[in-house]
Image 1: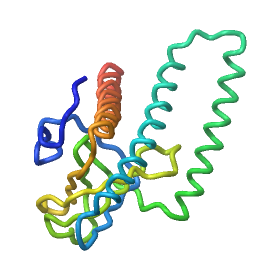
Image 2: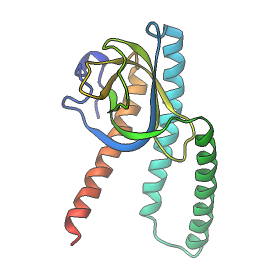
Image 3: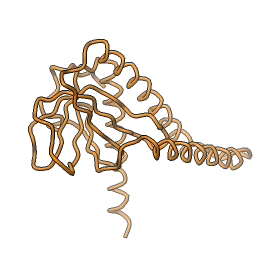
Length: 192
């Protein structure tokens, strides 16, 4: 999979790019000016670490689904389900205290969008977008973003100042989710 530089990405984060839609907790915090270089570097570092953790969780789940059962398999699976439950409960508890409300979010490697309940920030406004991309991770993916044109009740954001390594992780995450959605759609169509 080749890498995409910021200049190679379409101005609109959904033009010709894979994306996925999911019910996620997300918010946009407008700032009086674009985040400075140090803030962008820190956000990129944190986003890369979060995406690497998420990809490890997802890849581990895919690897487990193809494993042959051994004698220790069922016991290991029960233990793993218990650990997943504990993590989910802990995440839910943390979300109750601090996370934004859930909304239908569409996300690509270049940006995100969701329906607004109120007025949108002005196009061109800069800020930080926070998206909780997985129910077991109580930390948000936080990236600098710019508000694009207002689209009748939708907030459209384009990620800013994301380096190549972080962009590649975003592409992998979005592609994985997009592929999972397509597989689910095909399964649903085959099932009577």
